[in-house]
Image (cartoon, rainbow, N blue to C red):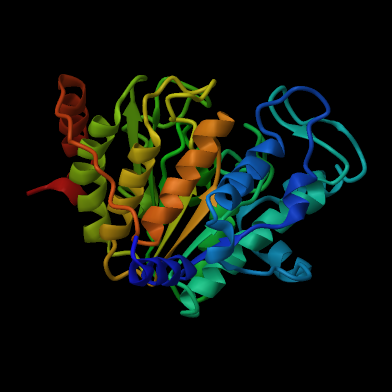
Length: 355
């Protein structure tokens, strides 16, 4: 790189925000568990090693806005659920066989929800257009009344409610985690102001996410599930995102895009059995950014990803793509499997994909 190119790259990196707080490391398992603080420390170390960490714009959270965060949580979670989470403070245990809690879990989950809506506030106010929230615990499995699948509060849903509160009329949530975001689906299933789009392995945990789960009432047609078999490649994902997601996003014309960014479809992930590479995640990010040209901005919120190497390297490539430094090089792959997915999508989502 010449000096000019280096200065230009530094400027582009500064246009992307990162939210990270040491408190996100305080949600700790008391036994071996794939969702643990090393997920975040690996991302931070990878970015620091590559001399990238300090080049992004870092948003300081300061003291948590507890009252405002709880008001947003009450819009998506039941009173009983919030009380249950608050009651975890000071204890170790399990909510279910997958979802643990530790003494600081309730305050960490509140902080993650706070970080998610602060990112939306920053984007809609015009201070930055693209932000990645490096927070945990993840959130997309958290339903109206239940914590599950490593998730406590639904961070993406909190972000969407903040966007609605700030005047966004059309909010797009795109979820590329390998697991279906059943919680996010449930929360917005009857609404047409939030379009939920998910690609995920099926059948797989949590058992939801079929094509015919399209929403109900006003929300009918605004819940888009693309169930996938295991083992798909970068090129197959590219075909799906270019021909299904891009078309739907452009027609929906969102005011803001919130991304449930899970990286457990990486080929190294111990839980996923999918074949995406870092380049594949960069490619999906590039398509997301290009498919909402009039959006005020994009908020990426970390979900899954349990290969430390796969997660940290993929987040790095996504951030470089968000900064418009990386141009992903993925060749589209047209296979019988993808052709069948495209055909089924035309059937179930004709309101978006009709010619």
